[in-house]
Length: 214
Image (cartoon, helix red, strand yellow):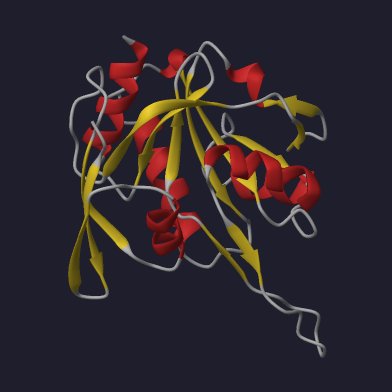
């Protein structure tokens, strides 16, 4: 079965029979996913959750964690992992998503030992390990922050079907803007992307995690 979605496109409801790069591109620029029907029998249906029809394996490319050590996503195997692509200077979407993950971690709805939380920076130029560590300290000492050169992060993001775009640099102050996919990805215990979460409730996020833990 192909997943079906209904999304809200700036006040206009658009129904899509397939979910792919087009939906991700729309979500990256502020579109909200209203409801997704999963195509997997082992994960129940939840509002604002898209379940992949075919689980997507993630490779073992190495990034750098907030402590300056080399870290591979394969190191997370054995746990259900929530993964957000973002950056520490993000003004809104990233802090909101990180706060939601913090709430989930402390909700008691999921087992602490079986779930991990990861933010992968799409702004390696500014997001040094020290910057990542300071950012994560506002949310949880147990969260993992990964950063690296764009040449290293881009192929990792592609494996998730996540996208990010860097705007032109301001010639006066060197500042630049970034746009990125806002959803949170969920990896199962074998390191495969199984679901994408779009501002879902804590109960929905916990439901996905617990289904994968079972």
